Amino acid sequence: MLNKKKIKNLLFNFIIFMYSSMIFILSLIIKGFFKNRKIWLICETDVTAQDNGYHFFKWMRENHPEIETHYLINKRSKDYEKVASLGNVVSRLSFYHILYLFMAEKHIGTHDYRHWAYPGKRSIFQKYFEKHLKGEFIQLQHGILHMRGERGFHYNPMEAKYDKVIVSSEWEKRLLNEHFGHPDQNLIVTGLARYDNLYKSDVVEDQIFFMPTWRKAIRKRELFICSDYYLKTKEILEDKNLLKKLREKKIKVKFYLHIKLHKFIDLFQELENDVIEIVEAGDEDVQTLLKKSKLLITDYSSISFDFIYMEKPVLFYQYDYKDYIESYRVQGYEEYKNDRFGYIAYNSKTLIDKIIYYLDNDFKAEEEYIKKSNKYFKFRDNNNCQRIYNEIIEPSKKDCK
Image 1: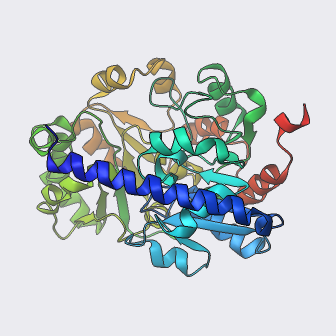
Image 2: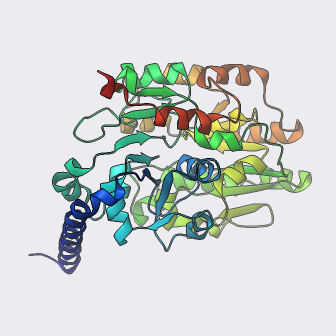
């Protein structure tokens, strides 16, 4: 027997299907009016404008207004007004959202574009409408892919086919080609769009940024409260020696809970004090937090690349690395560990000791870690968006066969 929630979802998806069908029919009638219009549709998730999608969109609006670049986002998002100030914002589930899906010559995403940009249930839109989308799919990426395993996205012509994928180095290109199966000709080495805003950043305040990634096995509150993720993180934020040192040095820790675990943020807000601040998603831009911080503490997140790109120190807190490797089927962890461009702590004591070391040594990144990071970046400049644009407007290599 169907419960109310399932009935509501079925009804919602039926309405979206009928709505999409009507707009599709209309698009066939009026397609002549769009013949000379170059429409690019950019989407991160339905509620964010902080990643490579937003930075590339902003660059396009400032440098190529002749191209109709539109940004898709939920109107209730905290980032909506930021995007709207640039113009060409498209509200999710609006008429233009679905119309531009059919009319766009470029579909540009940072996460799973099909999941976030398609209205209603992805599989329904994909089955009935995707074949009518004529534009190219460009993957800007959320971050630098750096581990071999199920966490990355494998090439699948039916599910995750991208005509072009942006990467940051020849090393990352080989990883996506040899391990994840992406055709070599689809992989474009340009660097990430948001890194343009990090190059030679000198906006630094007396703060440490603590941002771990999420864990797919702890989605329910009762599991989260008892999880190592919560308990080990709480242990750091409550450590008396660390708090004493932070007060002595007048340094603040800003903790940012991953968006996929944000519903549990109240558990961390209870830990706030004069040197520990819990940042809610949307209240502060992640890139700004990175630029302002002197030290980054994370675990396995690709956000670490953003920080070392600025040649600032990174600490990796990997208390659960064995479970993590098994859960995400990560391969080659020893290689990953040896190539890390920061100190890896496997327990709270060694992490706190290393934080205090940086507090006492003016947060200077060790030269060996900066050297290790060089293989992940072909470019360290502010021309990534320009290179991405040049590659997008090039005729697709598959069209030249």
